[in-house]
Length: 83
Image (cartoon, rainbow, N blue to C red):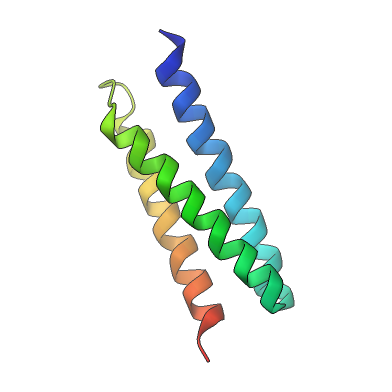
């Protein structure tokens, strides 16, 4: 019973981590940090996709919010990576 909770918590923590890394990277515009931010975002997206495969019925609002946050993060990092 705690597995879906743990999976959602992991998604949440991964997204929060990606948000922080992207924020720092886009402020510094350091190429290495931007690359790490892109990887953090990719990891968060993978975990989100895994959570979508195992819905519990109780996590719809969380997953919708997570999707919106991931889209915002992706837009932010893509803007920073533009030449």
